[in-house]
Image (cartoon, rainbow, N blue to C red; front, side):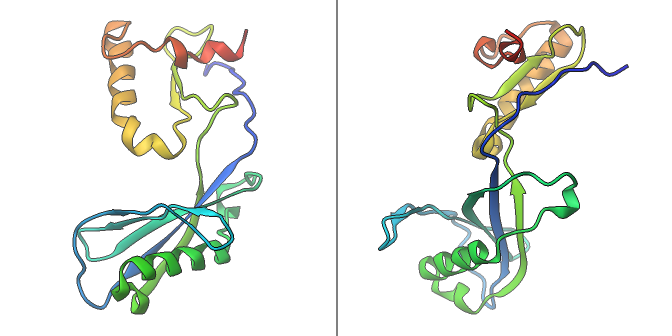
Length: 172
């Protein structure tokens, strides 16, 4: 039987938006990370990733809305997607006329204390978690995977100290 472990509830729940574009002309393969303030003093920080298939992935607009009960009910805020299109077009002018292939949203895994959850599920022998990285999963996912592989294969990890990430912190 799979162990019963109640993950802590998370609030707020972060919905991240992205768009996929197909520019008429190829663009540089360099990724662009922006950070600036709008006239309304809002910080915007879109990320622009040219992909090998010629499309461009743009992400960065978030909001905080409850996670739907079923994944197929996740819908993007099209206004947030339009903001991403405007920001990307401002940074890379050739994207102004790009075909919009997708406007989408996903929820970022987080924890109540905003620290990743990595390690053995309490009161189990061989059920582990590796989640809660929010925006940083793409960066920290490989290290998390290595740590979990060490726990599985060796029973402990030498790559990093996982004490701060221990799922047991939510049962205390």
